[in-house]
Length: 444
Image 1 (cartoon, rainbow, N blue to C red):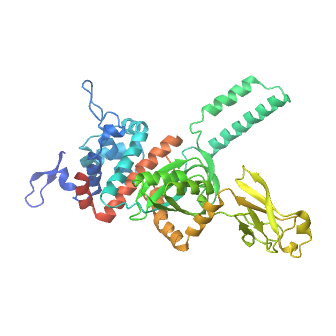
Image 2 (image 1 turned 120 degrees about the vertical axis):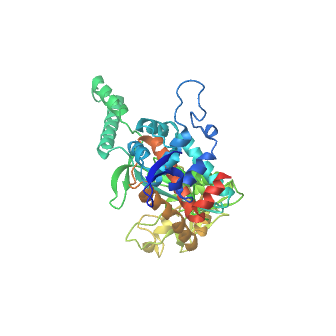
Image 3 (image 1 turned 135 degrees about the horizontal axis):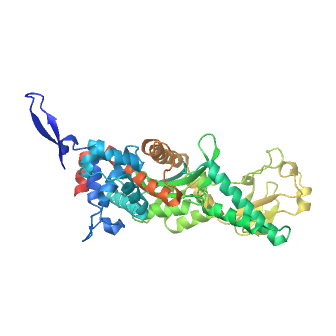
């Protein structure tokens, strides 16, 4: 590993100080080294994992992966700062065997190995399962916004160009104006030059100011709060992420016959809940229900109407029948209503509706929504908060330092989250079992 010259205190003589003596046995560097050493780099997709027969050998991807894991654990994500650490930091010198790659080589490794980084994270979760740190019985899912690398001004300009092109297309279809081809070409060129076309404006932080961001999804195992699955999405809301995150979590924990998944009301989706149940995944999610906001807000809620599955009808508080009127596939619901004459003659009409008759909607997957709601007990919601909110706080402020991506694009954001979740899981595992034991288990 190399050595450093040191001066003896007792006799004033010089003696060699080996780097290995400066890194304690339970240090995180030893855990990182043991973890990366057990990875099958070529199988995971890391390039140059086997040296070429001719030419100057490149840096071993193991060394660069170790450097990045150490960097993210120390809130050092910049390739230039990592280059500096290689020349001044004793811990990094030990970890890389005193190699000092330049920032271009460091940055190129991260750019080239997006999929491989995610596969390395999967391997770490697999190891955690094998030693009992992941149980795979209860999983909590949550999402949080991370700011994109692009500026708000750049995204606003991109959206303005998109609207301009859409207006031109509509005007061309209606033959309402003469379009300048040069202006269209300029707009298209400007749109294509945008460095981060996937970033969208989302409400981030307490100020809720629209900011270029991505929605980061995580699935956290309840046993020791380890992140077993993660994904970066461009969707501002979470209501389409229940099924994909539940499936990813199930795969990560070995596809058990039954898996309990808990999430907040933002993940309410009847269709996805039903598909989860078909795969043995049991969702515990509060259902988002529409409310009767007509009038002064005191009108009868839909809970006052009883549904009869045999006749496919609703019974109102006054005992009248609401029959099926139409199906709205766009809203994924069936609409029911009573005869207008009956509603207008009803003695309690003023407590029910301000329209000519009362309408009730029933979701196409109402059964799944009802079951999901019944399972979303206060205990389950309390468990969700205890499991999933701490990892996001650690990712944002202990690992990222500032919840903003350095790499542009959805792929770059996914790579950063892949490295960050690996760093988080290693840190969490050290806190649970200790550095000595973890390094020894990884070395087996």
